[in-house]
Image: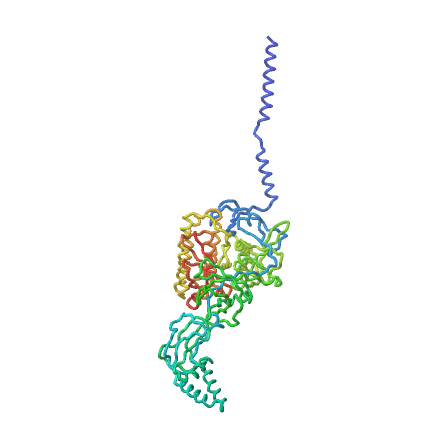
Length: 596
């Protein structure tokens, strides 16, 4: 019994020991407090709190992640500037570059090639025009060719002319014939008088044979060709040398093209030109320019470039409209730098690009002034400011410039830089300037029908603004610009999803900035400069979003913007120029058609 009791106490003691051991093992741990201390220690080592910003609105700065209060996009961490980077350059992370749609290009020496479109007419070869005149004074007794367009052959009788002087000359010839043996000189002089009136030897011989005075002289065609003008009627009295018909030989014709003075530098004698004729659809013709007029017409500001073509089958008729294209190739010895227009931002007095610099630590972009040469369609020739092998931003330049401005770096608005902008400084009263070419993605983006409907009022007001400028109506242009600004501000950006959202925000920022300035502009010249900037952005929107079901015609005037050339949009194919108005209403051509 005693042993049983002892065993019971031993079992209880063991149970207590095991329970204490297990209780110690599973007691609440103080590890969370240690981890918190370690976490706080790590943050204090980093020393710099994380700042979040919006890729499209860099002025937004927050200490925690979230959505952009302007566009609703997710905020991203803001990379700190690299201390080793150029202080005048803007450093961008790969993420920021991707979200801003930044693309770059290494520039190099290239031939400055340009495709030039020309319009003109077919005209008769001036060297093959002839005036059929009267060689003897008299009255028109008969006209066998009596309408314009009739074909005549050389030597054909065109009509009869009655002449008293002819009768007198024939009497003198008969008298001289009687004494020709003793006075041969007198006889020869009488015949020469008739020859001077264009009588042939056979006609004179016939007069001498018959011995009768002929009072009517036939008018013989001196050349073959088509009568382009009939200048007398039956019964008219004409003097010697007075024109009767205009005759043109159309076996060869000229094609005369209008060349604007801004494009003369790209066209030279001997250039190959491809052209079409409106009345001969489906056919294309080629030839070489044989002559370029050295004088410019002071009214139209164009020179004539001439192409000579054979016309034996009379396919080409004078006054037919023609359209031609010349592929002009610059000389490689000029070492031209050619860049896309999307790379260049133009302030009105300066043209700038962003040059890319890549190091082991970061990628940065630095503003640089360049000098523009000729415009080559979608490209510019750079005559100064860039060297072959340098890399520049060609897309997303406006986003780079906005970020540079907010960071206090040199930008298009502030060439010398300035104080960095924070979330509490949304630009102050600084004027926002725009680049002249839209930053498009190079193709359309998918948008919903509702998004397109949001844009229709914007386009409607744009066309009204264009029409006001074609009529030189300053008051209407200013009021329409204000209405267009209101329509832009009313667009519901939430209807634009994904890439379309970012694209719309680029256009919205630029268009609003320019429309806001028009209300203070005092003349049409200033408004037309603003309209040029607006048109570039509207062209990008039309190509990307295709908002209208109807055709949109892209029209171009090479003389606008101080001969740099400018585009605009129209719902009609007919050219009505908003950059010159009544002064040069029909200057321009359709270069593209945009259709949904």
